[in-house]
Image (cartoon, rainbow, N blue to C red):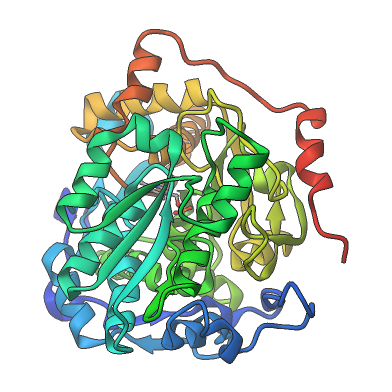
Length: 456
Ligand SMILES: *Cc1c(COP(=O)(O)O)cnc(C)c1O
């Protein structure tokens, strides 16, 4: 197809939209290692997981064989409010960079939650409602997941209790108010409302909290309240499954115009957007049909893939969750306080960890000044103020496009633009004031995290 017939933004018609999620585990030769019960070290069963998660979600979590799972009608209906998300050709950025590369981004920031997290939030809220639950509990770091979940719970009239990492609770009061506007209750974590919170506060008075700690509190709150379950916005297999809608739409849009990407890039915190974006493409690679170059981008200050260990670890600080085999810095790892750009979870999706260990994708760590430089360049030329998390992917997309400029290669690059950054202006302010520092942990800094890994 000639260049001029490819629109600036590729949208799908309703009948072209995915009606099933794709489960990449079905095509993996080496399946991700099972979640283990921390007491018995035996693989978790659906029954055990159902104490914490909704039953249907527990089943999805453990299903390594069903390739396609129908998206329920109610979820398809909700998706229609903000999907399809556009696949945009970054013509202006290409021109600015003077690169022969073709750059596309899949923009997931086009909903009030401001990120891709709504794709899984609505699915998890739906299954909770269907099971007849009263509500759900969760943690949130930067606040995108809490926002997405409170929107989803409002839609299905479910109660939503959010434990928000204390430093974010204090630094992002507007995020908090969005969640409350959608009816959620928001508690700064660690708090006095849970046993694990009280214990952490006693051991570390004045702590500003962490994701691992907020997870422990949210799990305890769910287990201790009749009619409640815990939900998580990343890392889990079920979340990657729901997020496959990103990749399926991307693939349908590219296929529609006969475009084949060479490089697919995503930022990686717990791995949900990256896993969702690459899943259908990775499926082709796993089945030997096509080859793609996948790049996971993580912060140099929280380098789970590039410097972590592939080992069984705790998913939370309080060690109440199942053990997962993943690339991890250890549940005791705490990123440096001057790290501003999200993506601060110590571990990584077990699916992506296995794919990475099998050499099926690359991972790169980038420093935050370079990330914000890319964010600003993108904001000024493409008209979207990107989330700091998303800007990790922008950084590497620009780097790859600049390589093409040197070699003259006309590669097609696709990256995930996971969200907008309007609630991250404190970080942007720091960058604009020239006060952002790059901090790369030394091996010494990483040691306490590794020492916290369980002996297996
Ligand atoms: C949460 C979030 C991420 C990182 O989470 P993943 O599970 O790794 O995708 C990236 N970008 C945005 C905008 C987010 O809100």
